[in-house]
View 1 (cartoon, rainbow, N blue to C red):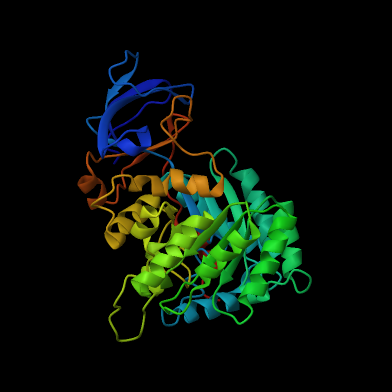
View 2 (cartoon, one colour):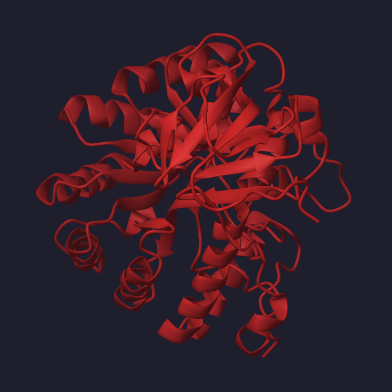
Length: 426
């Protein structure tokens, strides 16, 4: 049951708890009021008179979330395409084999299911990566366009193509056609980087197309515990050498965590200088990295978020995969991501502004309108039955209330049985 009932229409939520950083103030958590009228915030001042006042008794309120790194086209294929050994290679080969099933109707059903989950959990903007090899780009980006229209006003949806860097050529192969599809849809150019002999040449071809079409870019980078995998350095240096001005996002960046400190710090400084945006995917990286049968993992798989943030890098967290061979679990629930990231990455001591990495930082990286408590902003909030961080992180907040345009939404999650005909074992 919901912990309280909020009416639709104009109202003041009195005595709410919010992160100070999201109010432009110093400190950790503060208590204030929030007045809503015509779907907009009209006041954040405490004690203002109002006709309808609800005493929230310290309930925590956050702006709706931005989930900037997902794989909606892979989502929920686990019942028919499970990872045979939980390894990264097992995930790659299983997904590649399942591509044969990725008709437009198959992808649309699974993506729409995922968006229904994200919306119910309180997310209002998503970037998804789209597998673009095996002649999938035209069909899957067509699905994205269809769902952008269907979900307009509920979830802002972006997409980024996903191809291996050794398949990136500016004048040959399939990648130039993919780049045109991306450009025509107003999306983001993406690739997976790892050490290949001609990495510099492939990156130059990649950025040639990004510049040709004036595109932002988003890379999967060094998703490995191999300390010799340092393609992040090459990306950052290439951005600087080219004077590339559009937004560059790099995800995962796991390997720097197992490099010598001096080496990692040099790379972090270069990332900061190049103005890259970093997104960490703690749940998926914990699941895949350092996995060997019969052996307990020795590290957490995540990138150096504290050091990157201290260097001035815009750091975010996101869901990544859900119920597919790369991650068997997840539900596009950003509160789950917050809870797990806090535990895995030790976000609970030191800086008090980590909540921005789930809301405003990813909005900045993707160019979404940043959710906020500013007067005049849309009244899109997640209200939780928690008055402190220890209460917030100790429970999954399953009874949360999601307000969109100031009104509570139906938070009923779709049943997995809705996908039975799509993902049942073949």
